[in-house]
Length: 524
Ligand SMILES: *Cc1c(COP(=O)(O)O)cnc(C)c1O
Image (cartoon, rainbow, N blue to C red):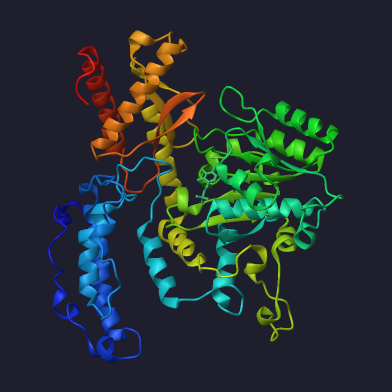
């Protein structure tokens, strides 16, 4: 990779010769790019992709651009006449690459780091070439049946029982929306047919999730007509996990008030701090109360591919539905979310609608039409990229990579703990480390109001300084009202050296800010 690196992306493409001119089809035809042209342009495009990946480390992770400054780089009006493909490829190198945030950069440790892995990208190209809309079995039989296969591969990889079926959606937001739509139907509301607005026979519905649950759960409540107020946020304990006693109590209070609980959402790996809700206790409560249990393991679920790391997941096999995002920590290009459920027929009750023009007439036996399980009709052939990713790395290779990320995160956590000027702000069960600078002079006084504000301010300036280096990109959250820096390790491009470097940058910048601080407020 490194020998192939070029710092300057502006050289004209070597192939510009023929691709720099229009061909007859483009000038006057009524058809698509010819196969020969496609082949030539395709090779040049793959070269551009490989060049980008080879030199991605040389870009600042976040482009140093101001909001609104990019539009002017692009033609304000669409071209009347055809342009050669070389012009577009050159513009990608010139205008697009320098102005994107580089998610494939080894220093990308913000949000949840992901990887559009090589096999995944290649599969996306093949899928695009097939151009299939997999809305029905008959509109691409293999898309449907390969989806059944890879969904089951992933189920096995995650150590879940055969009772789980599933499907692939675009995002965890959609997967959780489907799960809660099913929960609403399972509660006997017949909401798919009758709606829930203005129904005297349907009390206000209630969904329970921890205070740390992802906003997508709340958004699903908005979208499903339950309203944000239907989501009851349950208190968390000292490790930011849902308190099951508080959950039980909230459910009883609502029952007494005449409200109808329908679902509990347990998060295994919260977005802020990767906290793990006690899913076994949540399953007990859901079973006792007759509620749907949905498990949001969008990020953390990937760790269950490693049998030795399944401890925190014990009990998730009792869930009604589970979401794990392969586009987060399973090295699959966006978009790919896995929704598993042991009650697939309920998902179908909640979302099936088959107008005459979609009815399959030519089959005696019913076929699986995945669109009946989702709010959308059109479907991408997402199974192919998972089939590529799992086969290319093998489960053993995936486990090795996830293990490495967890090990590096544990190492980083140990360096933070050993440094008197830093502190960990949450346990590190997966590959994400929540930390902050806390100069040793302030140790023990963290909770004094003025110290609190100073530490928030210091860490805000620290993350800005770290990100301004362009070598790493970190994001933040607030944990127990403390400004918290998150280091999320999860990219296949990241090495242990990159983690070491990120820590070195954090320490250097913190020391520099401390030194500036002692010289008064000058400087930036
Ligand atoms: C990232 C995340 C989501 C949202 O995922 P999308 O695929 O972007 O919708 C939901 N839940 C958790 C716990 C997450 O970390």
